[in-house]
Amino acid sequence: GAVVSQHPSWVICKSGTSVKIECRSLDFQATTMFWYRQFPKQSLMLMATSNEGSKATYEQGVEKDKFLINHASLTLSTLTVTSAHPEDSSFYICSARKAGGVNTEAFFGQGTRLTVV
Amino acid sequence: GESVGLHLPTLSVQEGDNSIINCAYSNSASDYFIWYKQESGKGPQFIIDIRSNMDKRQGQRVTVLLNKTVKHLSLQIAATQPGDSAVYFCAENKDTGRRALTFGSGTRLQVQP
Image 1 (cartoon, rainbow over the protein chains, first blue to last red):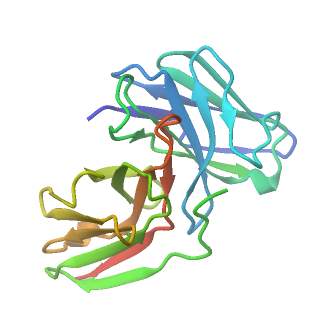
Image 2: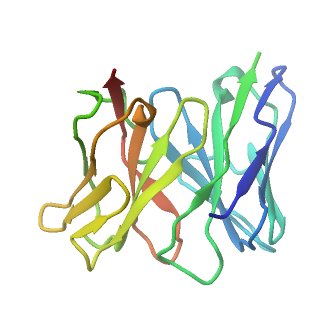
């Protein structure tokens, strides 16, 4: 299967700082990537859809200025949590689906555990 | 947000037994469904998928059943093993234009040796 890689796997940052999370599709091109957030013992909640070469589409209630998304190439999307606060601590997961298909599986990264202290 | 759960229901089974995990999906127009397995601290791992023009699909030790009449999806795991212990999520393709998956609330499977 295709591989999606996230970096870092975990990060601890101080309140008020910004953190960047990278999501790469290693062996396929992804015009669209998706960012999810998962709190403990809960499901994955879609935050935004990252579109290569254009603005991301954010879900209702997700602050676009807080969670900056950049999709600069067909294999890389980044999520930057700006001015992080303890309530931003969560597990962030990206996914990508191969270009050209709709009903195809989505491949997920291994996730990034963010802890804001 | 969608599909937020306050807690994860748990299914406990004995090693070697069959497991059935259920999921109710929300959109009758959804045309594609996937079951994912998530181990602690990891991203979701694909198990099996099914399109809405099917009602059953089998893989290795797993079977997915789709009942569109009642919007119900189930995952059957045969001869459950300790390595199957994880949280299982169903996901649906609600909006083909956006191609983002919407996840169900999840079920924790605990396999007792």
